[in-house]
Length: 52
Image 1 (cartoon, one colour):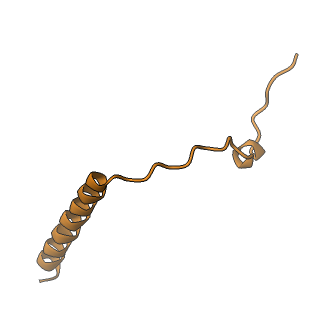
Image 2 (tube, rainbow, N blue to C red; image 1 turned 90 degrees about the vertical axis):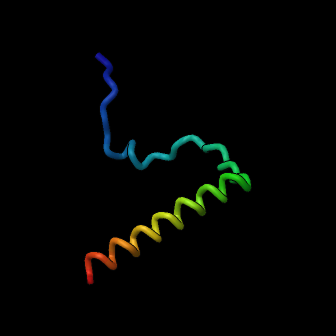
Image 3 (cartoon, one colour; image 1 turned 60 degrees about the vertical axis):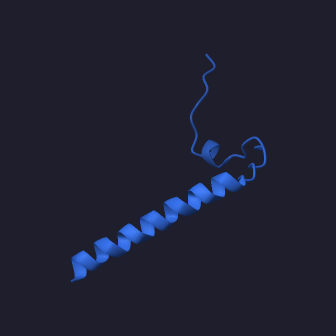
């Protein structure tokens, strides 16, 4: 009986070549920038509360 065995080497095997990632549009960059700025702003406020 032929069975396919799981091998740890399969994890390191080469996978199919993936399509190149698409570039972000201007709107996507602006949205990402806003999210980063909000996270940084909130972390500064939380850090000031914790360490004060």
